[in-house]
Length: 306
Length: 306
Image (cartoon, rainbow over all chains, first blue to last red; front, side):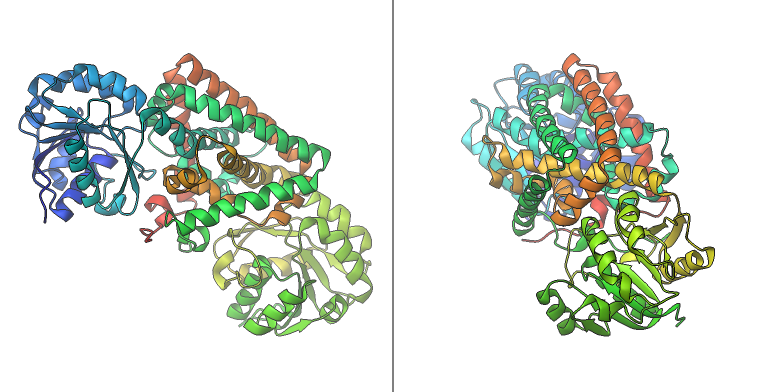
């Protein structure tokens, strides 16, 4: 048990915050964790399941004595939350966030914070398709990457301490600048999510194939898209609205490449298709070797019983 | 132990055929299973691991006494295999296949077969990203759908017997006509695979994001695409070349929808995005309720260890 921050405040109590709480408790990373959620129903659930040592009915109480304040709200809500907590932050405290987009969070949050606190943006690359205060679990961050995106004002000691905290939650920690982060995530996360949402929407719209057929026969590939497309709608709305440029750039590249493959199909260019599909296999191998997925068939799903 | 066909011949010894063999043995569905693969290395592996009761060095020997012949080769090879086995088929035998496309398989296979045999095309909607004779396992078809696509000449008794056989392998069995099958699969399987291949290719091509970054940070959504994009390149080349029209139609719809979502991102239309993402969540719920996937987070992947 190594306490890294005496008191931690979690603002927003969804999948990430609830997993952080159980992870903090597992590793003994804080003496006390306070929590706040805008919705009374969420606060009631948190109290019922013992999520946070102290659930507060207003943000000021949650952050007042905190050494680390973690903003766990959708990206589009970060600015307003920062403005609301700013007058109540303890001098010397560190403020971080877990948003999936970094440039727009920095622009929204930094102007509100007093010079007496450190702001070190962050982004744990971990999640599931579930959301809400009941969806968290302590091992969510184990062996996942957490990217810290220090600003030009971030103090090295504050960054190092936050790094230790995320390592205590089980993460590997990397650092990069905000624009590169937003491009990397557009490739590895934002564009794939939009594509999955789109394909699931198309299947739902198609009059000649019934929803029941789509659902019954999903094991042929489609079900993996539906998992991604089941993620939290508000969170993802904000991601696309705030990482607009990088996402649109990657989608542009994607469309170009898709058209080239469509053309190969139309013209019957078998060698082009086979070469392309052979190349993509190697990337999968790299991901398994990097420990970011399992080699078990179908992600190690057990047989699904009716 | 209920023998449905006394002797079964498996032509092509990859993931599907090897899973069928272990499944036939588990349920005692045949007295003897013979097998053939074009590659000597595959036949050697089959003999080494006990795949098939009898591995034959030519197709004629494998099919000569079989009551059921199952064509488990890539869709583009089905016609040539049918021509080669036709003179050696036992009168009264049933020939089926496991190809992912049905119209083109029927057109390629049916003209070669003598009137003395029954042809009942089929397609088990089951698989993993692995391939080859070592990749099979008996439970692959458990609770998965197998679609039978009888032709106008298929005899009802032959269809019913093949249905019992697939039920013995653990499948749910459905029937539909070839064109509808090809459209349903274009939606649930072929288009999603092409899209996943494309996205993985884009990530690999993008100069400003390194492969190492893509691989390390894949857990944010991308890794689910890479699983799909790791599937057998030759099999998938043939699927796209032979289900060209339906796949291109669905990809056309997909592109249209993707452009509408890109436009919503560009214009900052949050309500449109949120409504869309909320709708796709419901489809995921349907798939879990239909028993075609698990509700466990991340498909029930355990924590991946380095």
